[in-house]
Amino acid sequence: MPHFIDIKVSNKIGDVYSNIHLSLVEIESKSIGICLPAIEDNKPGNVIRLIGAESTLVKFLISFSRFITPSMELTDIEPAPPSPVHAVVTRVSPKFSMVRLHRLIKRGTIKASDIPAYKKQIMEEELEHRQYPFLKTKSLSTNKLYVRRIHHAIKMKPKEGEFDVFGMSVDGATIPVFDIQS
Image (cartoon, rainbow, N blue to C red; front, side):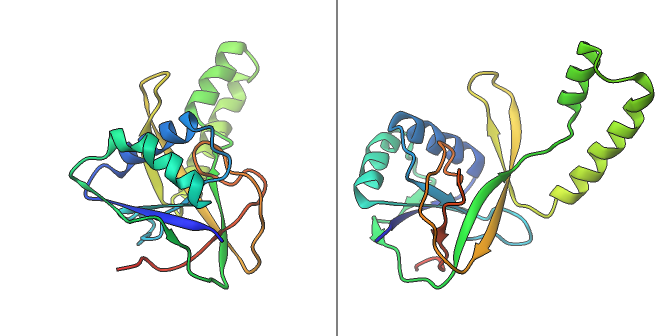
């Protein structure tokens, strides 16, 4: 049976997510998934939920404890309640971006005449991706801020599998969907 922890944040949810990522890297986790159970109006809300085996969540908490601040509330590790609904949680990756365009120009692999059409595709894709909640996180390697849009695809059947070090499903693995416990 999966267990869960909710981390309630009063501000800077992206910074907390970055620290969750660091802890998942440190413990080399492939079995903890995350979700945003308080999404409202395509905003991420103020809760990040981690779901996994109890023993793995304990390892996570030991690593994550150095990042806990007074502006966070963590629940105890609890068994996840039975749920008829599950979700595959993945990152929405842009196919078109200004960074990619600059790379294409630098390499000389895009014609000057194709640049306006590429920019139009960037704009159309950005409009399409606005439907997904996002977290602003900072890359530790480049120190740049970037947006990580997150998609929760609802499924009726659970599927076991792996998660990456950002807590995203790698192979269609699902996590149970349930309300925030009060």
